[in-house]
Length: 222
Ligand code: MD5
Ligand code: FE
Image (cartoon, rainbow, N blue to C red; front, side, top):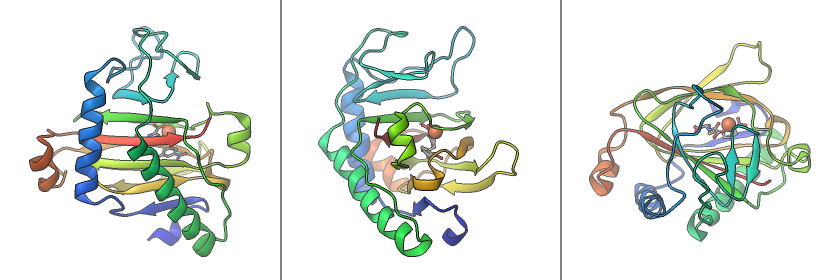
């Protein structure tokens, strides 16, 4: 029930067609061949994240919770630019979500001009603990500039809660879904406790040769 989502959170089920999802996978594969491809981020010794990541536009540095021009704690690679096709898909999804949130939730959110796209790759046991996205500028956070995300591949449980103690609300994110968080929900706690292997659309696997796993793209304005 989308009307039960917190104000500023909008879910567009099946926003990306299978053809668009296939194109995104192709673009990411090409980028992954060069420097700046997928790696396992780590907060420090013995503190690796349970996913692989590729940063586009900027590097997100877990050790300092900051954005940098190079992968300083990893290999010094410079992140690839955000390809125009992904940039445009982000802006288009955001525009639709802003309309929906204004109409259905009475919430006004600014648009987004994305500076970074984090690509998270979750394998079978991939997960992401409960956290807030708060490494962007105080201006960006204060204005509630939304974060836009696209899910591709296996279905995942996604949890969110307004405070650390409240019982989280669980949602399933499926291949092609777009999720936007902004306005009063920009600082909401969220995480990905579980992915369901083997749930990706057969057409996507056939067209890409993609194996099990979930890809999530999040776009942010710094
Ligand atoms: C994911 N990614 O599925 C998750 C959630 C991340 C991250 O949380 O920080 O890379 S995608 C939905 C999302 C994205 C950004 C912010 C919020 C939710 N939020 O503020 O709740 O890989
Ligand atoms: Fe996050």
